[in-house]
Length: 172
Length: 265
Image (cartoon, each protein chain N blue to C red):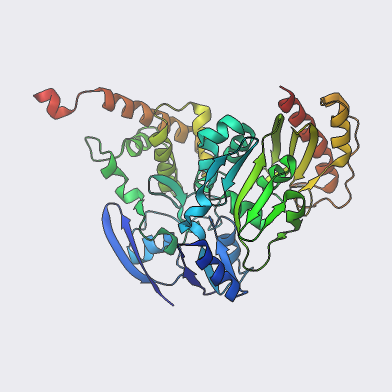
């Protein structure tokens, strides 16, 4: 029997009648059209489907939409708005571009959602901490080295932007 | 997935009533094993009873010689709890090593032990510390809890409320992760609790088990030398593409020695 779920996605309230077996990732992709979140392995291993739920990274292929009733979800489409740089990108998105952190791009949404979750709790991670954290994200192009560089670069950029006076403050 | 109903009760008795009334209903904790199982159609429950709304399963409480962790505590909460880090750091460390960060943000201690996956980490801690499993009906000694592959002493309508761990004099858990899944190919938990040595193994057999032979040796002397010549039998150990029974028997010896070394520090 379908049940009603109400989930805040990227700051906006959403709701739908879904089958209880509907996965969060299918809710995002099929009900909301947010296809940036990918289904890779569908077995909780590859991490292409990582989103943030109430500030913590989770694998959206292994959560029911029903379990997320009332939760606040951030997907790759909404990440930049949480921390926009001058170009309107999240610093980690900009760093992936600058460091050539993606090749085919399939794992990238999950990598960025995973890496940004790390940066929420660790502003200055070491290479080891980044690699350890990304254990749950697989890149079949094996582009890990530049992904780690991108996370480091984004961490540095975010620390710097925190230290620097905000543009309007500087102008005043 | 086959179709099922989803219900999220607010009290333990509501949850238990639902589970009691329908033998094909299943409790849902973090879902890190149950949801993949459903996707593969290896289980066909009529209803999932989500335990995430039950406040009673969220406690962490310190006793004079024990620490009790609520069944719905997620691995990330256990890994970062100040009281667990202070009084039972071995459990915080074990929780920090489960799966990956995203799995740790969802998976729970109660779900892990109720599932009795042969490669889960927590069962080794339950046996290795001699913990007590507290359900809505009774207290079950760790020894009696795991009864086989994916099976436990839990009855229909019985859910794990909390796990009470005695505080050990010393303890360590070391695992050899499967190179792909990162589940324990072999994990060994060693401890000295109330003056007695305990050794528990996960990943190697149908469910977690103790190694009395090593415990006796460690009772005489809690040191690597005491156990390094003990032969581990490969009989009954798991065979899968990541490790043969012979290799697992070998790994038990190595992991046990590393764990004793870490615990003796």
